[in-house]
Image 1 (cartoon, rainbow over the protein chains, first blue to last red):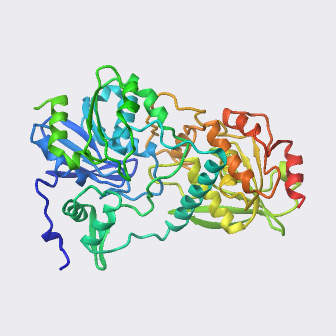
Image 2: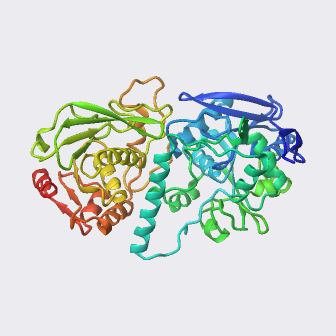
Image 3: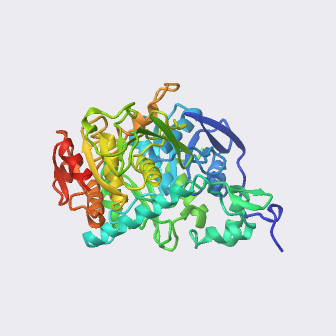
Length: 306
Length: 216
């Protein structure tokens, strides 16, 4: 029997209490909020290829401790607008637009994976706007590639360029492949192999849409996992000791396709004074999904209960 | 002069034919904030074939995006769209267009028959490493072209020398030319300084470079 949205639930998952849109330089950004609107706000940023709904279990735990949890779908993700172009700079602008729309007071910021990187950039660029920075498996390793010979590196670059340009040539007409809820969950499991069928099926119902020919992920088909460019992870780590807000970082040690492979020994030399590192040995990249209660408790100890 | 509109993703690109003819075309790539010239510039008048010029995304007659998102790599894919239309071409890039031409040569080592890099706006980017963290914003409602987001973002991209030389090596490994890249002009930001030190890169005048790549 094929599942329908009405068949799918997940224990502890709670849809946002409020939803709104922010216009960020003409781009419509879908914002989700959990908790009392009058409570002190915090910002919660999802990772690449995710959406605010991936916090449907974790965010309510923070909200129930007295916080107004503000998250948003990055451009091209979830219910935010699909746009002409995507880059890191634009994502940081959108994050700041969401913060501007929420408060001018400094707030705690929390980010998973790519969201952790975005919140780090926000914390560095606008230290007066951030009280606490929490990274959930969102810090890079300084050793992203094994040592390879120069000619092999050149060959790898050539293949990467061919693949990326091939993708660019297709996106004018690209559409996401339709399927059942089970189909989309299975496809996502290739990138999220540690997450349960029940959770992934739930995600389809909040991060997908049902068309006449089946369910599709809402994410813009122009977006592509991976890529190339001049950025070096060492640059991120080198700036970490200068960070102004208080810092807490989680690492999930079980390797996963979407994980960044950072080890404690990679991170510790760069942590700012007083920073706290929490290592979960038996958990993968999606620490807050595998162990939401444990992560929420550590976060609440760090930022406080209201 | 005629204009062809090419599709790159969700963007329409204006490709201008400045001079018709047979043989391998010369493709002009403008600098940051510029647009394609209306006629063949004097310094490339000696080219012995057709001459085309591409307006990058956010510039000239090409689409201005909503909310920015520009990178030199995206402009490299603009050149990919032009090369799909033209076939083999020699590239002539000014400033930012020179950097993008280098990336396009590394990604199209057999389609690009020589690349000429000359001085022009946007040659430096943000330098070889990032400075203090910055969120690049523009004043709302600023008119374009050029897109103010293009001006802001494409003047803040980081250009590590070893990133630039990786494209030189990708070009020289597969190009049929012994020297597929020619650097003209006098500006030498760190990325270009590293490029000219690589095997397969020549420093020459524009006239000499045009003669070299136009000879066969």
